[in-house]
Length: 555
Image 1 (cartoon, rainbow, N blue to C red):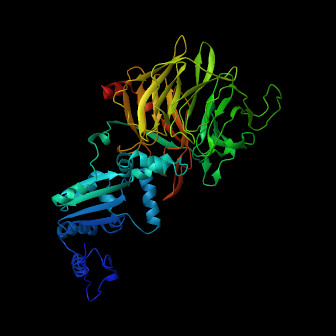
Image 2 (cartoon, one colour; image 1 turned 120 degrees about the vertical axis):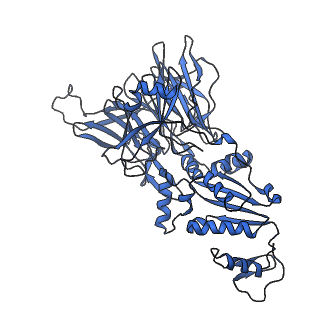
Image 3 (cartoon, rainbow, N blue to C red; image 1 turned 90 degrees about the vertical axis):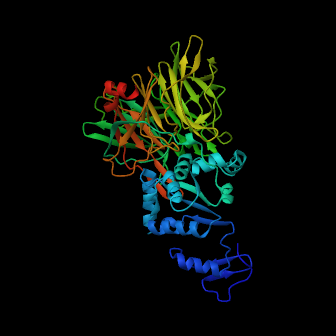
């Protein structure tokens, strides 16, 4: 609060009016700041707001600490509001720091104060009475009324959930108060349970880069054979991918095969996965996806892959290159509403195969909770009896075929929160039944991950979570004891920040299980696009083969 009387000598005053004065002064110099504010007519005991929006972190940390201290000393009735970065060491944090280094604007404070707990302790030890510090996911999802969030989110189509939540995990808003009267101006404190404590396994899983140049976001994949993976859709730094690709492994290692995707029409522009699933009749089915948030894909395609062109039986002399054949599937019945970020899995009942489509999102629904069955033999959408309570609506979840049914895990809810439940759709004499598995400890909720069934284990890799330490690695869930174990990934052999969202994953060998992780990365409006330039492999044997270790850690 300022007096209307202005100083006769302008000094550091740059703009002056009866309601506003702009001062130019080095805030690292406490005496100069005090003199300038006094000359401008500041009432030191009046309620005062100090606002710092990504300012102090550009200063050396000892200088910014001193600024926080003198503000607490000079302003006995005040509220300090600060917005800055945190979490410097995970992949997104490394990319964020590299961005500011390129601008010659080093982020100093987040090295000494890397999380909300450290920032809160910082203010409490620098003279402030109370402090509340929230990351921006908590601020947006807990404090902004749902009606306002719905209004904002309806202004234009939005589908960059991973980048949005990652950015909000790496920024915080802090309020600190001096004086009893100012405590009411603090942000509400977060619930104690908002940050889950993870019991990490001491075992780590090694990650190794594969020397094949292949990158992309939002691709869909399927394993065509023991050493063959097909990739469809997605985007790269050059734009949408108008081609299909295959990864093949021979005696000389992995290689990529690229072929124009001329027969798939709009699906080539899909930047969010369509679902690609093998079925027993041969080939794979591609269902759903989008070319933009206003243009979902409505067609269904059957894709077959010939790893050697013309078969030797037809032409023993043929040395033709690999070929990919695409045809539209003409299906009758009542098709589901178009969608993307869904799952499509093959389930079986009484000798018949069905494509089971669940969840996703579209132009009008932030998350879908409906399930649909496509009879693959007759190519007809059909209704099936399904008992039990259906799981909540979600998108960006995983679905794995299991004992004729399908296992769902995680996803992003209609309210915008990640889910951590494991739900089984199992076949019955009449049809199917939903059954929620009571997994303990409950895995940390996440979405944008990939999952595979290995024997009696559900292996979930990557994704995005909120409020938890580090980044998702692998969670292994026993399908017999319903116990779970969170395991870190050792990425020290990977020379770039490995971002495991918007990626593909395939299980390459069930006897010596290894995961092949392809593509992924992020497209942040602030920090640019980062793509994982090569596939990587994850060796699962250290945890799946260590039965004694597993029993010891979950007991």
